[in-house]
Amino acid sequence: MLPPRPLRLHPAITTERHVSKVAPASAEDLVAIRALLECSGLPTSDLESARPEFALMRENGRIVAAGALQRFGSSALLRSVVVAPDRRRGGLGRAIIGELERVARAARIHRLVLLTQTAVEFFAREGYEVIERSSAPKDMQGSEEFRSLCPGSATCMEKSLRGST
Ligand SMILES: CC(C)(COP(=O)(O)OP(=O)(O)OC[C@H]1O[C@@H](n2cnc3c(N)ncnc32)[C@H](O)[C@@H]1OP(=O)(O)O)[C@@H](O)C(=O)NCCC(=O)NCCS
Image 1 (cartoon, rainbow, N blue to C red):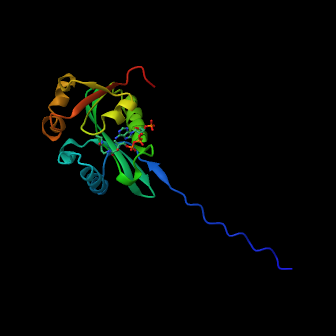
Image 2 (tube, rainbow, N blue to C red):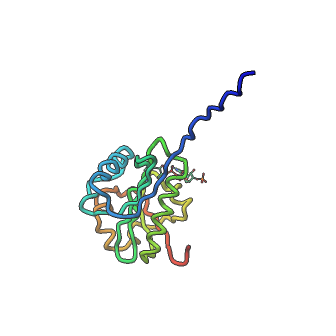
Image 3 (cartoon, helix red, strand yellow):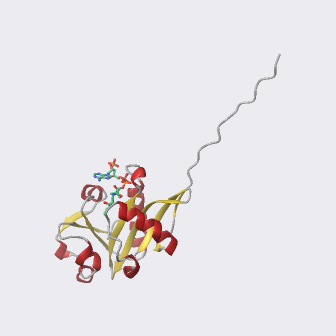
């Protein structure tokens, strides 16, 4: 009788997922971030001047999600939140927001404000509420994102981080 054939198992397909610490993006990462933002119609022209701090999510080395904080005193502009088109609706957007909020709380940021034209429902699910643009912190209103990059039609939203965990 022939010996039993060895089982041939397919090697597991593993996805190495990695969230980087929130920090100014390297020049190399900025190229990939800019491409992601541009293909989603989000502003990029002030990335060098404003130097927002990014949380990046990588899968097998590729940046698949990004989001950033631009600080104004005890508030921050939550901006440049993007997930690669082929990876949307899989929880990565929520994960990036969660990481940015965790970092913001640790940095004693009490209020996050954002502008969006396309993702009001997504942010509402994460606890953000619509506010008048004029209620945003005055110094934030002077930022390039507020003044020129996001048109007046964009919806302004906020979330208080006080008392939340
Ligand atoms: C908005 C965006 C970041 C969401 O990322 P995502 O990875 O697809 O979102 P998630 O999978 O984490 O979704 C979290 C929840 O929001 C919902 N959701 C996601 N996108 C949504 C949308 N456009 N409209 C309504 N609900 C949405 C999901 O169904 C999910 O809800 P559930 O848990 O009840 O099922 C992504 O669609 C994107 O990159 N859009 C283009 C860029 C953009 O508009 N950025 C925001 C401006 S800064």
